[in-house]
Length: 520
Image (tube, rainbow, N blue to C red; front, side):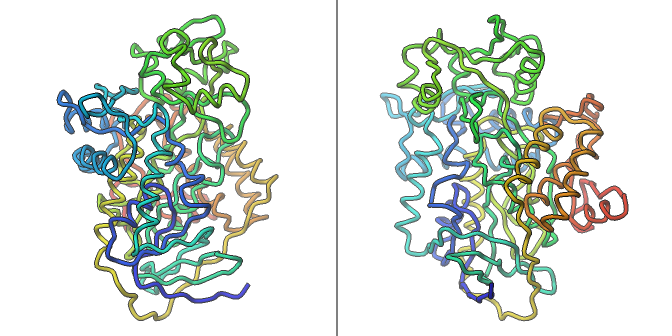
């Protein structure tokens, strides 16, 4: 397929979830070209988020308290500046979304209805229609983007790789759009392509999200941070669906309990906070109950009961469509890949290690989530850091003269059968419980699949997760090694470059994971 050339005088945003839309809206008056892989606002994790958006919105709360809870949940490796930046922006971000038309639930006096979720010291999660937060917020933001004269949207459009200058700067991307392949040159490139839940057999994310943004950035030479940290939501509805429907954490905030087939509240065996313990602890407790044959069920019959359909319509519909009535019977649940704390390393302005390349949302790793994201901080991060990235791009109106550039190698594509094999192996060996033998088996599988689909972006992302999980000889937050169950006294983030990973594959050497390495 011949490669066309298109010069866009402004930033190129890859991805159209809440982070990408926030970047685009706040980049005005710069002309933004946005790539949406599916119809705008569909099949992105933002639209599927149920619980709400966390911020210190009550008079009893404060950004400082929200920051403390964020740092505590992150298991020792949260970047304090990123956490402070996020939580201080939180109240204004939520109020701005409210003013934009996001239909948050309000109290009679005009305040926000707030829920408490796991590891939050206070009720601070603003809800929309019980469990419709992501969908409703995104609809409001999409409407604004469609009205904005400075935003041009290509849909469906996919980025296949990043174009770099000879000095390493990112100057554009190769894009597939309307059966054409186009070299799009832009004044800056923003990755807002979402997470990698689709690499796992059981996920609450759209299955098409497989870490492509992280993979493209890695291949272009960007520093990747913390790829081994994948959060598993404790309560995906266990109906054998792909993706798995989510039973929002707000249910547990309202008093729903996790029980085994005999009605025993098993999470209390692992943590005194029970169902409101940090997500990694609750998820492993659910996993252990299922593996032991006890089963795992979320019981809301007493605390919510007859009000379920009104308070949590999305979860209610999922249950009823699978012949479970949550008003009168417990819901079968299982852990599912839900959120990636790792990604392209950025500062609090979304700047990566490569000139001209920014990242925002789940594909970025600012360090704000550490090893275990605090519940409902994801939508907040997408909107807040998307705003910060957009503000960096407002004056970008032209493209510098195009000199010699390096085109990316176009990635191979995994067949359906091979993708299924990869997803099952990721869940088995890089899921909630990991060990050396399993991770090495996973890497051997990735080697074999690479022969059939060289450079497939899903394989790049999977290898980053597996390699760094193999080399973290401890258990921390969402990363649990059964052969290294203890947590190291000092927590370090992992920073790695693809050249190091490739070198380890070819020569059996260990890649650089130094927390100080951004240029090795």
